[in-house]
Length: 115
Picture (cartoon, rainbow, N blue to C red):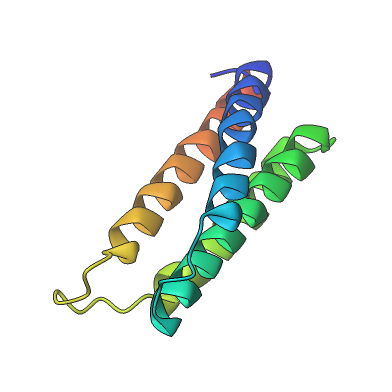
């Protein structure tokens, strides 16, 4: 995957993230419990942060450094996520998947620099 392809992929993801975050924020949650509202807000925050990270990475001069920074952030999420098998949302698996994707993109940056 070239740097151009990484940037296009991030742009494509941004096009999905923005409306998803807006939908979550605007969803009628008047009947939600406090915990459900917290989950809604957390999910919206995550989508918005991911959007902003993508925007920052797309505009970055050094794509690899930005991807490594994102990987560090995801690592902190992995460490903070409850690995208990009873944990219904299974966020840890999601974040580990994100981490694997970032590792792959960083490796591709290394390959591109060596050719």
